[in-house]
Image 1: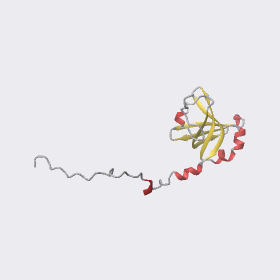
Image 2: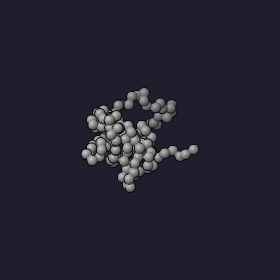
Image 3: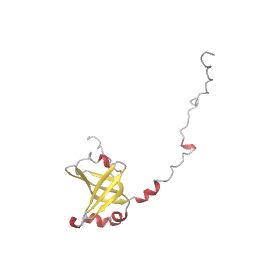
Image 4: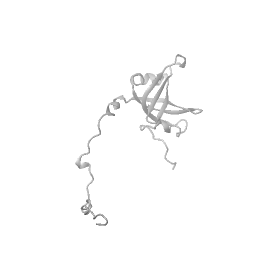
Length: 143
């Protein structure tokens, strides 16, 4: 049995800082804020997207056919989850997009306070395992 991979498999997202670990051609999922969308006239319909997560940036290549399938997400998404294949050219890592999902709605949850723990969420305490009664203070030395 082969060892487990060092990177998460889709749909979980791999942090940008760990994109050097999976081998070329591995299918991974990345997620991040859209920093840049570029569609150079010389690129024959290819779109380049730069995503940023808490660990760094990630370059995404979107071919024309993929763009047509996920056009709305590519154009309007502020936070994207992209699944694709890793491509390396020397030390530059790209994700060639296969699926693109607009997860911008999750941005609204960033400022929401965490839910308060309910009393029933506390694990039960075994009888006799409660904190012991406080010990009486010892007299100060020399008194």
